[in-house]
Image (cartoon, rainbow, N blue to C red):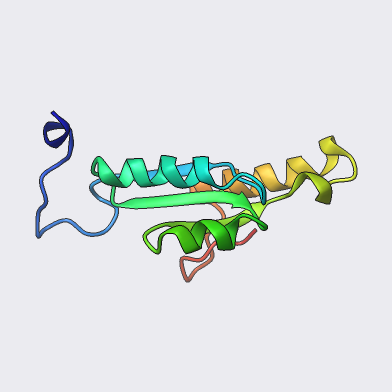
Amino acid sequence: AGRAMAPPLSPHLYKGQAGKIGVVGGCQEYTGAPFFAAMAALRVGADLAHVFCAKGAAPVIKAYSPELIVHPYLLETHDVDDPGAGSAGAGSAVARMLSGSGKDGGGHYNA
């Protein structure tokens, strides 16, 4: 049943055309859920998985698998003095990345 869900491989497709996913979550203490969510997407046929997480979680999640593209743009809870103040900036940076409007001319994201 699982193979019926996955798209067939084609030599005419390039990276990302069979599916992309973005997982938002993860902090220094909790790295498993975003990792497993992104890996599950890859196993059912997506070929690009981005994980948007806190800086403390990024090296840990990246060490779990080199297949994941990890973006350490979210703030840790202890980095924000006023929960309402800091989270808006991090959230808008992730929103720009997901929409593609945060890319510079070289295809890199500007936070």
